[in-house]
Length: 456
View: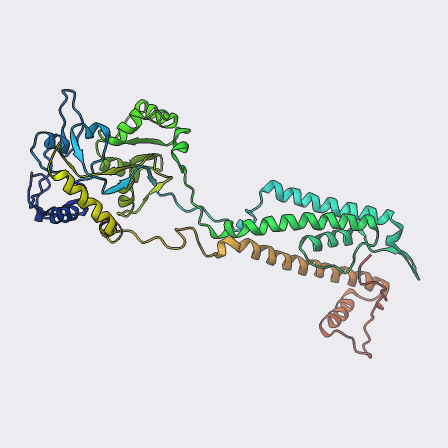
């Protein structure tokens, strides 16, 4: 059997039946060499005639590697042959040299588009709107209770006043929400109750937002259409299939699990979802528009994900647990020795080294970096919205200050019966210098003495 991750032809044409252990390389070739050395026998490598692993035929015989073993045309089969009860009835297997399971292969999705306001993602739109309404509501209630509470009123030379105007109430609530101080505070018990519940509310909201913000900004999120077999089973948009003649199809066909039964029913009812080979299924995934998933053994899935064009990925956990074993004819003298050799290689770590050699070290794709593994540095796109708000706030502030400056100049020019131009020049000098010359002839409206630092 020819399979890229397990054996590869180096010198022979792909359309000829070939034998010779020096004409191949791969995981299984290295494994055969190691077990032969351990069991002290010589061997030769030949490709199976029909290129199949082995399945039962209608007449009771077997094709592929299993068939050649039953016919005594081969002594051992070192290949990714899944150990199954059906095959175990006609051949003997060693202990598994590799553990695996059925997995889902999909086309790698593109990264989720980053929003400039992604810093708002930790809270939903509904929560942000509720916070806004709560802010306005608390400010209005604080204004009302301060108006009706005698404690909040104070007597001054010019009359009585109350610090909690509607504008100051809004400012106080905003300062509390931003966890900043304010130059006024409620004196009445009713006002302090309003302030206390608002503080508690903001404490919980800010804590929840902060806890979720790091995860939303640093985790690289991808638009993965499915993440498990359950996701596949409950949808029909994405088609899925498996190799037409192998253990994967047998698993779904014989499964008593409801999800897998539904999946098999879908595959048998859909047209063209089964593949004539794993290569065909993998090619279909790579050329799809993310609308086809291929059910394939996890080891092959992992290997193909490291091959160009590097646009496939494994999602979810394995659907089952099984293993690959070395097959021999029934009652073969080699079986026990091969089993001991496999166990010895597993215990010494040689099997893991072989897998690393033929999977990781020969990868054609870039190794996953921090971004791909979930830890991504913040980019300008993540926080650009904060800068937009800052620039917008500064621009609005300058605009309002200009309007206030112009409005005050118009009012003062009318009061002092001077031209608007003279008043604008006078106030401009005051703004830039911080004071006026004593001998200045320009009219100036005297500044009012204020008894409070808060506008009322």
